[in-house]
Image (cartoon, rainbow, N blue to C red; front, side):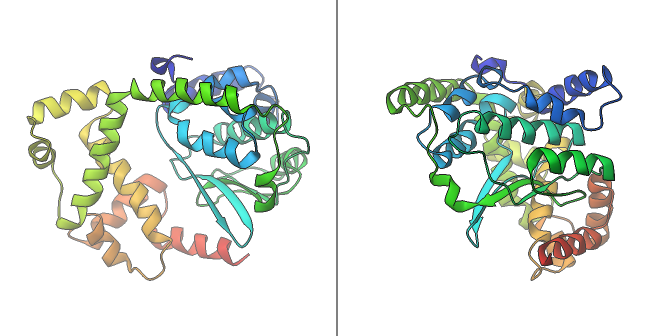
Length: 298
């Protein structure tokens, strides 16, 4: 897979939906797609995983080079209470996408580990039927939850030290060099991420405009607009995406009031934040926070 050949998330979702329509009778089509994953399907990202020395190193490679597959960094990883969680806080495009991604990762890892991956919980942001839940629980071998704040795989942190069957430090080093070169050939993506980081810093200061950001970057508003279009987005989409990402993060902090979150996101009124959040998530900020707290107490 060449650096310019990554699949944008929206395009991948469209292709996935078309594939699922070919067999409408499947209960959980994403699982069937994920079962067929091979390293070559993920390009250098897949081979980096299977030639890593341990499961932990394989996940590090995934996080470091994920952009080579989706064109963006959308995963997070954390360890708490001896449990490791790989999660995706990006917009959930569809349940089929969530299932195929997680099933693909589990299939790929299980095929190249001495012992199968142990999972204690799998969460989906989308909604699924009881029949679909049963199919997923059989596949993943653990509890499956729907309507969660994010999509995630959780299992004992101790297994991160489990060695991979094909561990090869020399080959891994060559693959990492190749992957680093590919990342270096994505300057526009780096620029877009830098712009998003700048928006995050400026939001608490008040309403952030395209003109103000262009001035900070020492370019004209028209140049900024053209560069955004080259990245298949526009100013409003980028601003909304940035605010949505931050809103989800802030709502998990129960010490922040909704009014404070609105100010941190650059809204002059809480009502404006509430309307925007309902448009993004189809629920209110309060309901989203309460749902998260309910999940956390289980």
